[in-house]
Length: 292
Image (cartoon, rainbow, N blue to C red):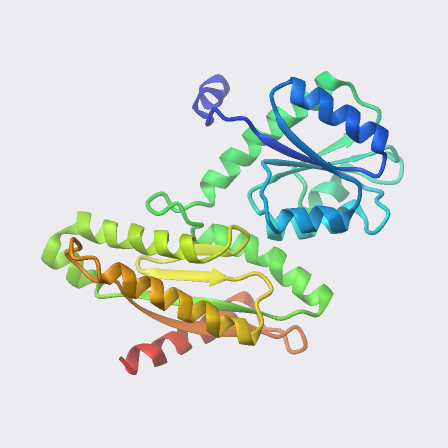
């Protein structure tokens, strides 16, 4: 069974980011991993890692616990927001002080004690990639490739914790694909599936890789744009609706995509639950639907 699963894993050159303040070790790790066929980049502190992760994604991120500007645990929490699908392996030479449980609680997939051999590192990377691949598949909607309801709740919990700790609020967008039933009845369920996949494509094209985009119901979609302010949410909505209009102008389409969208704001000063936040956004969405 395990061998069959490995054969089904996508074949690709995995990208790795290593974060450690020991420059000598960084250069050694990078050289060895590149010789093994990995794409590898290195940085020496948490801030540099965050800046890089704002523009790029990595399959595997290996983080030392002791960094000059923040702990590896804190960086891991931020990584799981910026690159939620990335495998995180935490490493440390202070195994008596930090434990495997501490690493997993922070969001890591594995915990590696220094010193370690190249063979051990390669085995841990391979196992962590396989584990994360299988876990991620359970969080994805099969039709659209977006996160499913379980995936959304898994990721938004990390976002909630960071929001509360850093005292930064955030918005969510709640969209409903209008007339999906009419498309199914008039054109068949294959057309209805196409409408859902087209909606997912437009969402992915107009939001960042780091944003949480999910299909949480039959015709319901949710987006949590990472650290979006009140001013920028209006710009994001305008850009999204403009993309929808352009899509609907294509003459070859047998249907039009019509979405009603509402928003809700999570305020860490007066916090609410995830369900309450979704309920607020749902009510806002129905108000916009009534105005059509």
